[in-house]
Length: 255
Ligand code: ADP
Ligand code: MG
Image 1 (tube, rainbow, N blue to C red):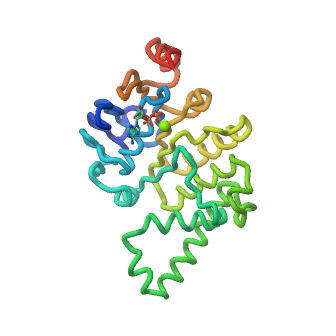
Image 2 (cartoon, rainbow, N blue to C red):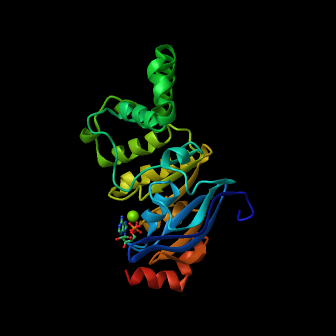
Image 3 (cartoon, rainbow, N blue to C red):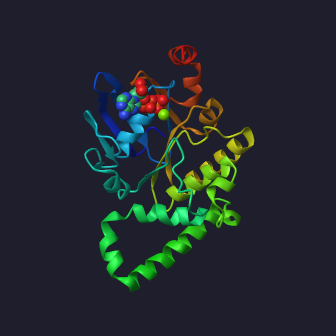
């Protein structure tokens, strides 16, 4: 459905780190109701791209839009409020908090703007906390993590930790979710579980922008793929066509 409405648009986005061009004049158009994958060899600039999109890194050049809203130039909290949410390549769970506390904490930090009134208005604070509590329960149920609500991340298998991170990213009601190598480090059965949950999340109405190294995962679940190498786009198409593309095959064999 390349005809659909754009949910994410990158126009000539470049990121330079002193001498190094990490992302080089990258343009892409992600359509609504798709799982759009960004792939490429190690060091290709994938995480840098997602960090710019979600406001963790400033762009050197270019513009980024979420639907019709220009998000380049906004900070991460402002972008989160446009209904974008993300997970990180390396886990960012709070180790001293339970699974459920991690979900509730993720939501609080996304609401920095409302934090001061929140502290002074106890009555609203209690109401707010009750709502977040209920929402966390619903999401844990949806993700199949209900039984682990009171568990600490360090006591759980890595696959469950990754699911917890995904669960936490849903607390802010995203319409567009960014996942940076969510299946990295998972064993084959955890990977199958994660892919199924990702599809369930997608089916619930959330569009997914996915960075992933595992080709089986990419080819199985993405609708459209952008391939970058040395920061620049080298191919863009459906999974079927990308798999046959000699330029892509060469980039990966040279990795
Ligand atoms: P990928 O996620 O595709 O593996 P990255 O986006 O992490 O690649 O990195 C792209 C390039 O930018 C790499 O050469 C990396 O070393 C470099 N890089 C990433 N972050 C920084 C930074 N903060 N400062 C300098 N160079 C960086
Ligand atoms: Mg990366």
